[in-house]
Image 1 (cartoon, one colour):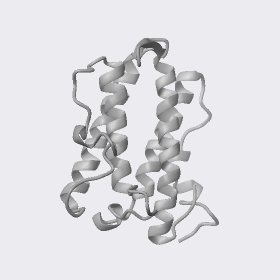
Image 2 (spheres, rainbow, N blue to C red):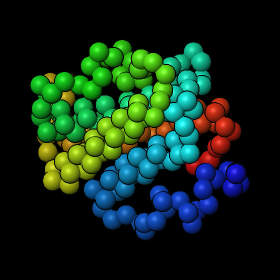
Image 3 (tube, one colour):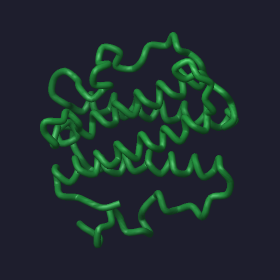
Length: 179
């Protein structure tokens, strides 16, 4: 059901529950959480076949692939870079060319559950890391000292970009559009 271009009525949208943010940290965290929730909403109500449909040819992007990819992104930036465990293998290591977008076989309940479980675990870990890490903390990125705040902004950008992809994929699947 289309609510005049809205995904959900404003009073039912979990992203609209907070008031105005105060300060840099709260603002950045709120935007990151907003996009994490948006990704989940864009996948809501779909079965494995729909989640696994690559619906914008010739791209291999699917909603399931986006969930897997964002688990990989959360894992990389929060576990490997901010925590500093660069010896930890990247998720979907054998899939470096597609960064988690592909899988073997047909999408099924187990694959979907694994993808969501991985994403949820990585998001939970990322929240813990961010809660205990000052935004001014310097970490090494490609040989250069980089503030954690830059990585949080990058995560917001990464989610925003991929939520745009999710908008298109979802619209092709069932016509649902909106915020």
